[in-house]
Image (cartoon, rainbow, N blue to C red; front, side):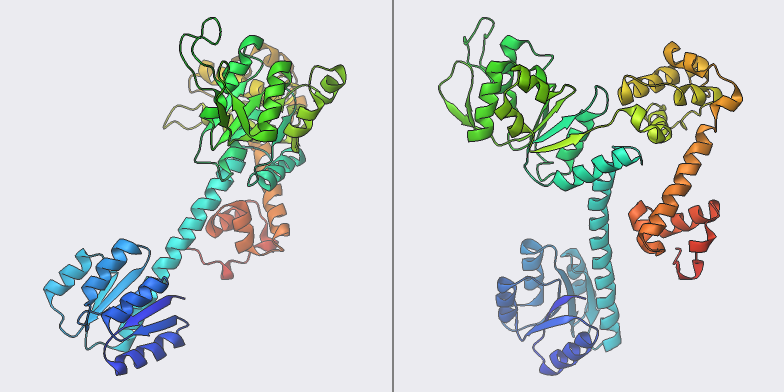
Length: 459
């Protein structure tokens, strides 16, 4: 329903349209001339203005131009007893939503208002869908349905909106930078920079300059002034990977930034402020490093306001089919359908331990895709360490990749319906698909007990 301002100098028209439109559920205010309409527009916003063109004091076209300039989200419906082609052309050129000529049937105007209302509702639904899709896409980058990755997604969603420092822990290759980027993309800082620094890749003598910047001549090789990563990330997110490798001197400075929000560049006495959200990551046990004295305990607690642990791939093998499918799509040439896997190749993947975790799986699929050259990926296309794990009989290999994916998809559909208490529309929203797609999937997998097509509006 719409918040409507009705502007007309004829009391009978104002009364009639007010009664009819309120009966339709709309909320109305009225004005008897253009000046009063302008005053009301100054005091509050309306979703729709229904205005006569010929008005005392200020005409309807002036009102329209004012709305287009100051309140572009407000629709305008113009009506006049002096309808001409020229007026209609002007109304449309000035971006009126519609135009009706007096005398008109009340039903005609109501119908136009209903169309405007439906159009606005559709725009709002599309806006919400884009926001939801952005979140879904960001969270879907954390591919999988295992309890381990589901827990990570829930934690990411819970902490993304805050400015709390987050520590990501887990073995190398488990996707810590991907989680950090997801946290940034879902945060209010998403439109600001995401800056990543690998503390283990920067020499100990240069880590302070890398983070905080340096002045010209501050040390040998500093031939010009350089801004640090804190300055580059201002307003956004700074991701410090392998923070356990940070030198003690840099730890002291980092602690000060987190406590006071200020720092100085190397060789400078000018204090700068830091407005960043800090996300850190490590594959080491920082508690043990604190005990050993190589990592500051007070810094540990500062960077670990919220901790997210990422499980190794061997503990989330149920996600292997989805991860494999994702990487097959990622490395398929543009416009080319992703390559499939033979049973032997899938057997090798499913029996390999992946000590390098998701990173190793990703590079293995890239390796195989290059060698296969668009053909189906066989065991010979996989890296030797993986293909050796697949020298098994057909019975030992288990189900194919497609069969495994279908089984997981059926289980996921059933679970979504259970969460939605059997309501298909809610289940479709949970799954991020249309009701029509849901209905097709239910038929495909024979989930007939929850599928009732008579209440599904399939368009």
